Amino acid sequence: MPTTDRKKQRKGSDTAVQGTNDSSVVSKASAAAQGYFRDPFIQHFLCKVARRAPLINRGYFVRWRAVDHCVRQFLRITAKCSKRQILSLGAGFDSLYFRLHAEGVLDGTAVFEVDFPDVAQRKAALVACNVTLRGMLDSTLPPHSGPVYISSSQYRMLGVDVRGESQVEEALGAAGLDWTAPTLILSEVVLTYMETQWSDAVISWAAKLLPQSLFVIYEQIHPEDPFGRVMQDHFLKLNSALHALQQYPDLSAQRRRFLDKGWDHCVCLDMNDFYLGLLSQEERDRMESLEPFDEHEEWHGKCSHYFILTASRGALMEQALLPQASISPVPSIGPSWTSTRLNVRTVPVCLEGLGLASTWIRPEVVLLTGGSSRGGRMTETRSLIRGQEGWRSIGVEASADLGVRLYHTITCLPGGGAVVYGGRSSPLRPTCDLFKVKFDPGGPPSAAQSQCPDAEKLRVEPIKCTGNPPPPRWRHTAAVVSHRGRDFLFVFGGKNQSESVLGDSSFLSLDQRHWTEVYLVFFFHKVNLTQLHHLLEVDSVNSVNWTICSSGSATICLHPIQLYL
Image (tube, rainbow, N blue to C red; front, side, top):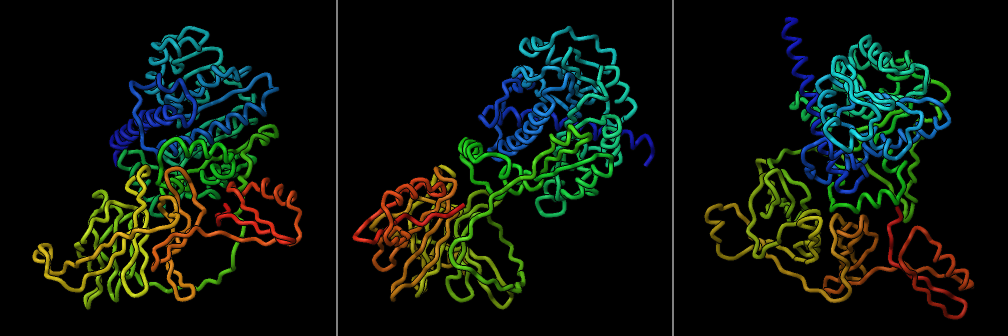
């Protein structure tokens, strides 16, 4: 490629990368407005706050929280140092300086921000025309004749390309950066936009020039699985390719990268480990209660494709490294199980769906209900039929509307048919009705069958029940079990709009159509009731109330089955 074309291509890519700043600041402002974190200053860097989807808000919460954790750790470790610095690479419209200044935690600290000249100029203009932001600077802005666009005793904004090592070193030195002082280097999804040779060079010169420093980086990993490929395609469409992913695709490669480039120690966590291991249960509960949410696969999938890394130079900064996440294992309860590997052969079928339910309702026929696809929520029930030419999908005409539902169950019944239970149409609209469905073998052809001879007819019968039904739920499990010649539908777990995880369980008698909640029964012989009450009250795993019955020397304790998490 000619040199001129390469320069044009790089300039176009640089412009696109600068555009990611505008998108990022809108997302940060959205998360702050919904209460995920407190940032009263981010709103001053955009014209209007737009509300993002809950999944995006959560992603920016865990990103913000991870970087904030590292910043607080650095400030704590260096609290007794007379001079310390924060150097933010590709800072964009980040409000870090203004937040920390408002909290009064920047004693002896100078914040340096580096970004493209166009971005620095725009940010300087926004600060200059905003009374709140301008009032947090202790000196007048200098003329924009050089790389320093904002200058005060504690805050300097430089417009310089991070890829130019000598220019960056010269500009930072002229702006007053002390190369020997403890320094926190921040890079939030910045280095990966550079060609790898340039991002490697930044990591190397930072280690060489700053002997007492902590490097914090937040970026993507795992490019080759389905989520990773979609992630890469997304950034390619934005003309902002993720370069570092190919050479450093996982946590171990990222850690080796920093150690090989001159850093003494390095700790690297994916965002699932950070979220589950370093945030308290109280903080997670607060965050998870902010908005209706039911995209857990996407949430944890996204968290597994981003990481937070800290690398240190010098003995002091080693103390500021991220701790290794400590995630409590799930206690082992119930019977032990053995597993058998199954050899499975896939058969292509032209059909898509998410959150639907299926069951084998008769030989060579699978019934599919509910769910959603790229076309929206699916109200049409379909079946997959296996013939001599393979599997094919056909429509099903139901005698009654099953409604829009996702994450429900459909359970095959002895003697034919199936039970449809639970699900939701949205995170605020659970479905608690029950239906028995069965293919109608006879009857005159319907209008739908006249147009499509392959169409099947499905008889749908609402099930009215007595007893104490379980609360509405979705993402639960259901199975038919037999006891003493009677069949029961066993329902366990799931979630609803008020509970992140349900641990109760119920039996539905299929012949009597009566719900019964399941209890565990514990027998204690010759137990002091006062001691037993104390034991059960301090049980931190379960929040349900125990029922205690005593007769003679025996004591019986009952409580609903709970899932120990």
